[in-house]
Amino acid sequence: MHIASRRWIAAALAPLVLAGLWLPTACASPSTATTGGHPTASTTVEACPTGTGTPIEHLAPMSLPCLGDGVPAMSVTAVHGRPEVINFWASWCASCAAELDLLARAHAAAADRVLILGVDSKDDQGAATDAIAAAGATYPEVLDPPGAFALKLGVVGLPATIFIDGSGTIVERVPGPLTPELLAAALSRIGVTGLSIVDS
Image 1 (spheres, rainbow, N blue to C red):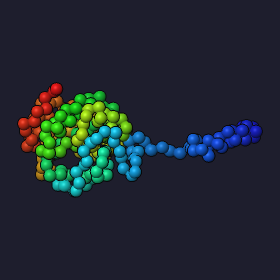
Image 2: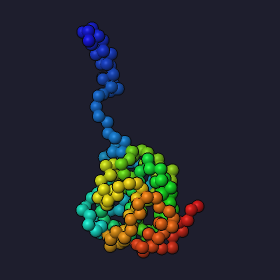
Image 3: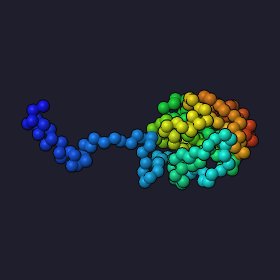
Image 4: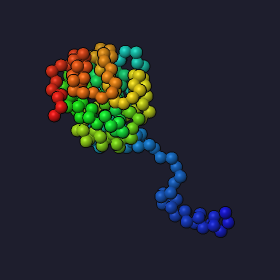
């Protein structure tokens, strides 16, 4: 390149560099972007449970960042005083949207009888919070951009749901989409019955 041309390019870029408009640096991926040190959500989800809980069988300890207010991270390899439903999903998974709605209804019907936990896996945080808001889901959610927790539980495709009783024993695994019938049957196996979760 001609020396004069290089000088012209440098002169043209200098104001942009000084203004911070052109900085050749790596950007954080949307799924791991944070505000004030931990993730924020564009919808109101419940705070994650606190404490270490009762370990889930055969799982080494692991924590994941929580969406919404409350504790910044949750011990996901434990149950927290009640049976638990762990739903692995992502906004790019077409069949996961219906599950968000179904689980939102189950959460409203169950109150505190069961903990429903969403695990947003290999996803963009902004897209995930939009999907949560669209479904009106308020149960606790954690973020797992690498999908490490899913792999720990042997989940290889989304959606997938794990049902765990209050002692930390994995009772049921449902690969693929849930239906109201599948959900009700699996909930009964962990001691949660009588919920009104039929399609509205």
